[in-house]
Length: 79
Image (cartoon, rainbow, N blue to C red; front, side, top):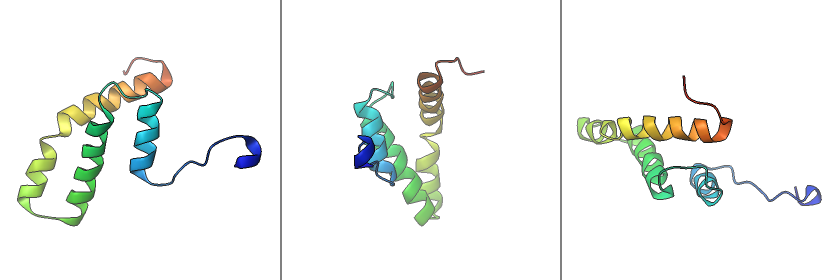
């Protein structure tokens, strides 16, 4: 990638989320998106009802943030 003048882009979620935050793609904080990533990882590795309930409490905020990200990236309102 160096020949093209483009930076190397990491291939894991947290560095990508941090880059997105640095480029003002989120309406919420990068820390919130990192919590979503942690919840996803935790839920994928822990099948307890407690972990599922904890993760589900984030669902409404995640959906709102994901819609806002879509609108930021496309310039179009969510339908």
